[in-house]
Each structure stands twice: as structure tokens, then as C-alpha cells.
Image (spheres, rainbow, N blue to C red):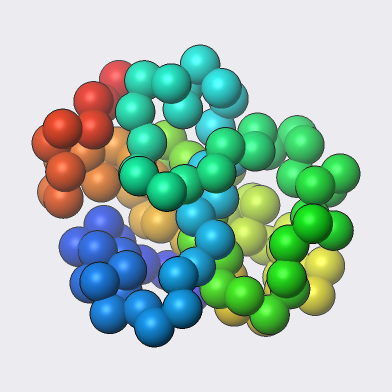
Length: 106
């Protein structure tokens, strides 16, 4: 699994030819506070039931609050056959702090 910090992810998203799936695995109340535009909210506990809807060869960027849940989900996805998984190190908290201060931190 690839690990990108917030600034690296911002560059990756700007340069991506094919948009990745931005998978935000936080709870709905957390997602409502703030999220990266274009991300899809699927709480961590629902990922096993939802993963069959996604292309296992599409790049998946997994996002959570601080990067711990997203790392666990990324590991799960890799073990489920997903070939291009990226974890946002520091999570949405780092994104808010280092890239987009308009996304509220909590």
C-alpha cells in the first residue's frame, strides 16, 4: 500500500489522468463536518459489504480522521485483490491543516 501525505495526495490528484476512488471510511457524522470534494463516504464497517461495487484495478485513496482506520481498510482491500491502494497519512486532519483549511478540523 502506498502512503501519501496531504501535499503529496494533492499533487497526485492534480496529475491523475483517471480520477481515483476517494474512499472516506469515517462515520457519516464525521464526513458531514468536512471532507475532500468528490469523496465517497463508506464507513469502515460497511466496506466488506460494499467493495464488490468497486473496480479492484482502479486506484483507491482511503481517507479517515488521522490515517489509522484508512490504513486498516487499505490493508483489507489489498488482501481482497485491490491492486492500487493509497492511504492518506494523517487523514482529513492533515488535509485540513496542510492543503485545504476550508475543510473543518475536529
